[in-house]
Length: 203
Image (tube, rainbow, N blue to C red; front, side, top):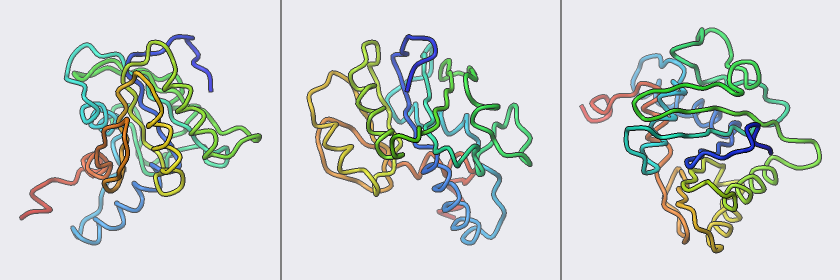
């Protein structure tokens, strides 16, 4: 994993894109049944904003990089869209649509990067190696991590417990124990990006 600009933003969001897309699918199926209505694909920029705010950012002049790691077999998001730029009927391709894509909004200035998993490592190894590199990278102050906690959460928590000078937030589907990190419930940001309103859940 290399940063094309050879510099790191103070705020970095590291995402297992395969896991995130699968979660969006699961939540879509469950909530369409519960709410008895069709849901649009999740708004990717809105989701990124939610993650950034949950990770401690306040609206303002923030500089954020978002790194999406994906398997080579998966070349696009199936259940996310770019509301401002993208036709929802098409898949959101990692390389063609997302890599090196900037956007700005009241939360800050964002740049998106995509990285396919190389053949020499597994998806799990690639994610953990990327996390280790970012946790040691100069210039990175705030690291927000969206990974598959069921698959490699134990290793991720152990890495967080090692000495570091970063503010690390893990986004999980349920609370977990450990030290060296804060945590946020991931489902809330994905539900918001899917357009699920609080009043629908608590009529």
